[in-house]
Image 1 (cartoon, helix red, strand yellow):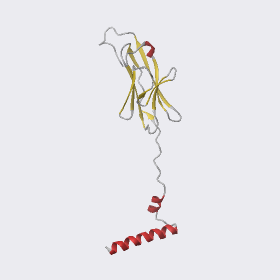
Image 2 (cartoon, one colour):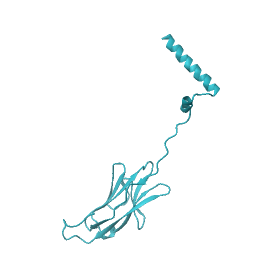
Image 3 (cartoon, helix red, strand yellow):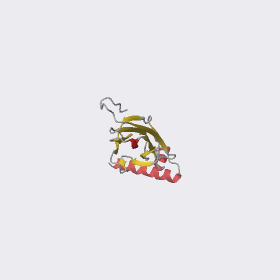
Image 4 (cartoon, rainbow, N blue to C red):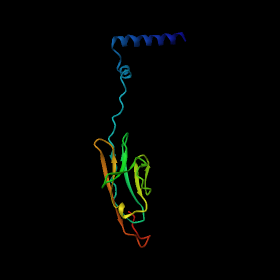
Length: 154
């Protein structure tokens, strides 16, 4: 026990002497330096938003996938007038037909139920990076489908 204590005291003395001397070993110098965090990766879109065509009364879903989002946020906007519809998973529009599903940490789905002619147009998925990054997907709203099972939804 006494030998172990002596060894600890010797190591501490050596550390003090080396520190005063300014000749710390590289391993100890590393411990003395502030830790550098990894550089933030820039967010990127994975794939593109697919344009869709759907009849009135049905629903349309636009999918936006982002990797390396980090501290940034994803928003959905109506492209024509820049109306903000959602930020991250939270809907900010008062239109109850619009919802957003955020899944698997990378994917945001803008869902518009009971489509109307007025929903026709393009929608922007936006990342609030600098410079801002965006992708656009468009919805074409067709007249009502006379045969519900025959209409193509994507």
